[in-house]
Length: 134
Ligand code: 5GP
Ligand code: ZN
Image: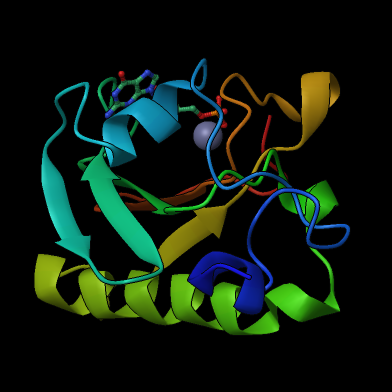
């Protein structure tokens, strides 16, 4: 059994999605095959600046592993989800948007407005946001 099997993270080691999809844009960014402006990273997650920012601060926080969307998360992903939110909060402080408030959003599927099928949280700040979103 390999180390990744032991960690339960390899394809076929359970119901978990593959760690990497070679055709996935964000997997390719995580692997360093495509360039990005990295804001933070750790063993589970990376944060990059959105290529087409819709707010003065617009950062994408995503898992290193390929998880297609929030719809694919399970109880076993609780530590990952905690890390993604903690990292977003840490970045919000370092970007200077924490005091004013900000928005964290993840889009799921076509009607949710998801265009990249690799889980990511949009961390947006530096302006006021409408509710409900359009
Ligand atoms: P979604 O539409 O899936 O919720 O969010 C995808 C986000 O990824 C969009 O805000 C889009 O601007 C951003 N994006 C698309 N391609 C790239 C890229 O190559 N690099 C970066 N940094 N962001 C990207
Ligand atoms: Zn991916």
